[in-house]
Image (cartoon, rainbow, N blue to C red; front, top):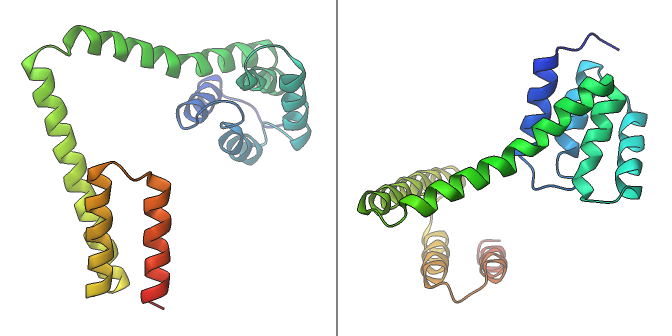
Length: 172
């Protein structure tokens, strides 16, 4: 195996933890990054997942086994730290939000974030429309979907499936 850099090792595990939702979620990131660097082999992943399945506790703890199998005790400790940081950050942000949520400035910041996200979404949608050929039917499907989404009564999966069906039917 290639020589490991502890900081890079930790950051790869942290990235995988931040970009996943737990359980086996970190697998694709870790597999890609560690195999590419020569820091792990496929059997390390098979062993780590097996240990994770037979061990008591949350299913995401297989990552600690992978850290151990690829870098010994220091790897296990770095992997442990990396998978603990994201939920800890969520708890810290939640605590801060609980203290600040009643302040008028907090509502203003959140309103501003919503506007920024909405504006970014509009720019992305406009780019998609332009690159895929904007026409009346495409615009109508998007407008109806947006109105139904803002209404909030229709489940997202029904909305997406309906829009996809409408697009496939009318735009073929």
